[in-house]
Image (cartoon, rainbow, N blue to C red; front, side, top):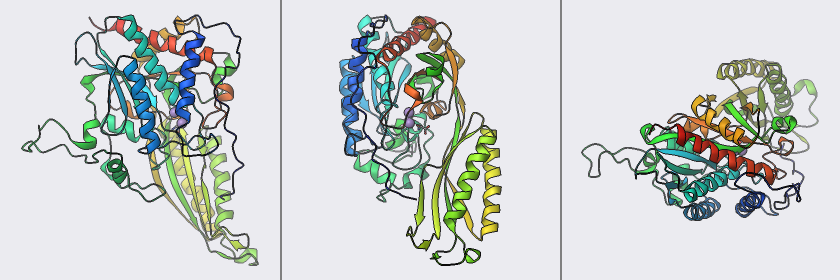
Amino acid sequence: MTEAAAPLEAAAPYESAAPHATPATGPLDRTGAVSLLARCDELAAYSTLPGGLIRRVYLTDEHRAVNALAAKWMLEAGMRTWQDAAGNQCGRLEGRTPGLPALLLGSHLDTVPAAGRYDGILGVLIAIATVDRIHSSGIDLPFALEVVAFGDEEGTRFGRALLGSRALAGTFDPDWLDLVDEQGITLRDAYTAFGLDPTLETPAPDAVTDASAPTGLAAAARRPDDLVGYLEAHIEQGPYLEEAGHALGIVSSIAGARRFAITVTGQAGHSGTPFDRRHDALAGAAEIVSLIESTARGAGLIATVGHLDVFPNAVNVIPGRVELSLDLRAEFDDDRDRVWQQLGDAMAAVAARRGLTVESRQTHSAPAVACSPRLRAAIETGIRSTGQTDPMLLLSRAGHDGMAVADVTDFAMLFIRCRGGVSHHPDEHVLAEDVAAATDAFEAAVRALVAAHPA
Ligand code: HGY
Ligand code: MN
Ligand code: MN
């Protein structure tokens, strides 16, 4: 039902909710946090939407522009920088000797449509600020630090999420190169247009190039031995830290997600047709949407129908076809898959009763992943160093790049309170005081890993 959505008002550029609050006690004072937030505002300007709304997707001019800006800030923080073969923007600060395994820090720079300015972006900037402070302190690093600004966590352009982090994890599926965006551009052609080589093969040993050097996209893949782990700071995108009066929290695990494109097909016809002669695809889809909600809710899962198109979409025509999306998530994959099975049976029953057909195609799948106890302990140490005594452990119902990076190294996440838990909306909001605390905690987590690293 593609009604024109009420125009979303873009949130005003950042201003702290407590302009006269006392400065944070950590090394990053409020002023430092406000300038970090001002960088979020700077990045927010790179969007394909008018009126201050934010939409920035993979392998586009906007992506290229924010990569360049992030690279500039990485350089200023003492890192050498490069863009990897999948378009992720990377920076590296060497450890005590060149070439040591790296602790990855980062998040993503792409957005959903009409996004907030902190989802992903804040984590990239906190990572850069952390390396900057570690670099300036001159501490002896037993490992390298790398910042990765992933290019496609959301999957907004091609429908499949985590493309950048899957390339880094070496789990990129060649079939994805045939994914197409709304203009019919394939992911393969988008890589080429972005100046990247979409080949995925590692050359045969007798090839001219060095046999160990994969070419194209495959070159983005990192080896487990080259990594110490991955830490990500991210807004909570939920209400629980705010309800508990906590600025920061530790992520226990990330819910597993599966996304589907569902097509309900009936018979288009005149709106004067008697009810008992109809095969109304939209009436069937509406029943399915409320079944999705009641079934998931009853099972304690999260499910969302975020997209629905009606054909032929005319006031006096019975809808003949409806295309809708389903995003289904659960803390445990078995629960998610069991509910998907139940939904399949329920949708078939609706179809049989109404003389419709229902077809589903999976468009994305990411397993639930648990954060590493070793890295979680460092995050907890970091939070405690800010004076927060009883950090909460929270399930992340939102997906993150850690779901992909977990295939190649351990990961953990630091959550930051956000107002009302609002996210994927222009009203996304964070406090400067919380950003200062998060940056202090993130740096302290890195220092804890330095201290714990075998000499
Ligand atoms: O969909 C998610 O949970 C994330 O924002 N990509
Ligand atoms: Mn998001
Ligand atoms: Mn995110």
